[in-house]
Image (cartoon, rainbow, N blue to C red; front, side, top):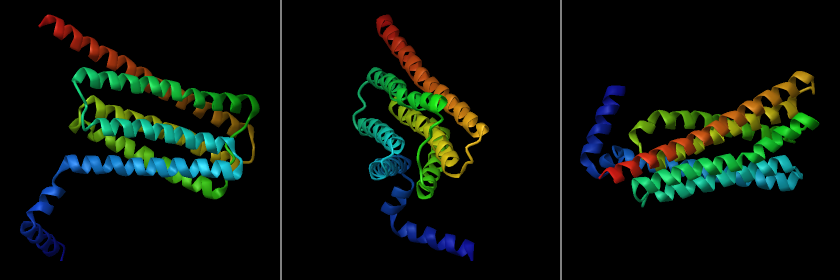
Length: 231
């Protein structure tokens, strides 16, 4: 039955070449994937901000604001794909994204610092934890799949989108663990220690991503400048 269904599908596509060409268009699939991902990011950010206001939780609100800011930066890079400019301009934009990652995650460092000193975590209910878990799993899976496919889209603009996505995935992991311990945990010392270790580890990973982007962007810009001087 399955081979027959495949033959029928192939016959149908042969009679509709425009649809067949759309299905084979990898660039179109890439763009649709980017816009769908931004829809998820904005929806999650709005949900978190609204929940933070309704529940009176600063932690949930900060989580939502962070995700909205991250989504806005990614959207700017996606729109930039239409007119990316010169290769040097693209690497400048790539480097600038690295700077923004470093600046944005001062908020995350502040959250971890407060958790270390006052043993506070995000005040999530069960529904909020489930939503956070779904978003975290989605971000981790999608970001690593995107990085694996990044070889086909080697432009600096595309690479910066993937690096931003990876940084957001790390933040989602930390947010999920903190909220799960706060909601389902028993308040034991090892839970507090795990939040400290995970928070510090995520901070280091995200800072490393930002430093890598700044370093790589500066290095590529220097190469282009030297090659222009050589000409």
